[in-house]
Length: 429
Length: 194
Image (cartoon, rainbow over all chains, first blue to last red; front, side, top):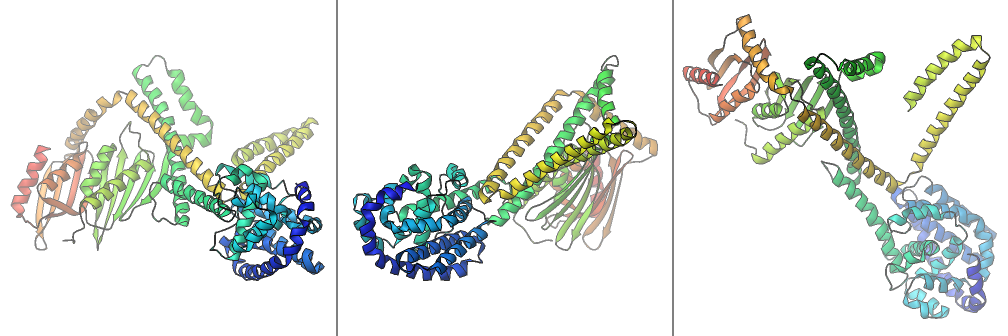
């Protein structure tokens, strides 16, 4: 990758030198902006990608300044400093894009001295590359023409140059970025901002990363220009991430709130429920199979001894399994908007506590549900307490029924909610 | 996995202790134990590190995949259960057996079907009903009451010795009120028809 700028160098050196001053002014402006934004975003968890992007930009601008005019080692050091900041912030960060970016930062750090040398070569050597990577109309224009467009196009391409330089060497960071290719979104940094100069930095970064990774990806997207293409991929990435959340929400049965944190919380609860359900079902299956073999033995007392023995002996040998296999116990609580259900299953007895907020004839409803589930009602106690209704049901699982706690709770809540929906709440009387 | 590890660990340690006294080969066994433990720990640490490396998107994706897998498992297992249920045929005998038991038990303990009604607190009535236990008996009883426009509030139902005891406040849903005697007759009718 180092060769690429090299091959362009002899052609563009003149062009670069002439326009460097104008761009340097832009750089300085943007640097000021990015400095402000840096301090603002530094503490913002979500903006870390932006921070890293900005820091990268910052560093590059500084590199440019060093190269163009000042050759100040201090600035070079601050480059490193910013680079390390970006790397440090990014370590525990979220988006793979951002991670990729951060690894880019860290990797690009050692190259800055070399790249500075490269900078002596026309920095717009990259511009033709950029125009190649983005199939924009600028491709046909001369580098000068392209440069001339930069100020108009919000100086996006300006950032593209140094970024591209820095992104050239680090090939290894590509794999983490490649992991994103399934989504189709290319790694870019952070959140999209409005059309400020800072935003354009990030867009430029994204564009460069795309180029280094996959020209095909770059070609995809807008053909209008570099400016829009990175933003679309950024948006794509963000949308893709958002769609994953909606997919998760669709999987979870009862999403209470649409915000991401509660989706995650609901997902966690749901996974736990699923796990306990799976365990219960496995236990039930186990007992069923043993029970069937035992009953076969009662019917035909001749054979099947072996089966029963194997079934019974197994639990006895292993004390832990015996305990788990012979006594089923599970407990879970489910809540809905107006109903709370607490289901405890111990062996073949099920205790259901029902707590609800509005007036419904729950006794009848629940006893019907219990009949459906083949649970024999043994005790019921409850009544009205203020505006609430609280009931306790002691039931026994009918022989041969294969019902599990999750199913009981779900059914009860479902019936309750249905009733609530059907009957508009009337004042208690 | 850690549980398994520690269990086999304990086993190995016990065996190792016994043999160390007698055998030189025991050295190798305990070395093996150490190696095994170290290997397991290495695996665990690497798993933790891998999990910590995961980024936002992959975590969510993994959660999605895991949830789908769990849902599939639940479905498969419950299908298996249903299959086994449908195969078993013994259920037909059981309900009748229970019912026979219930009436026998009631006779044995001298429990009789009974209805008591008292008026309390204005329009409210308090009822106490004893009837024979049947499958879905309570539901049927409540159903009958509801269909006639009554309901139980602050109810207590107890089951014992093949009989069901219902003691509860008794009220008309729509504010209708029956006298004590009427209610008693009504309840007796309901029980008889059950």
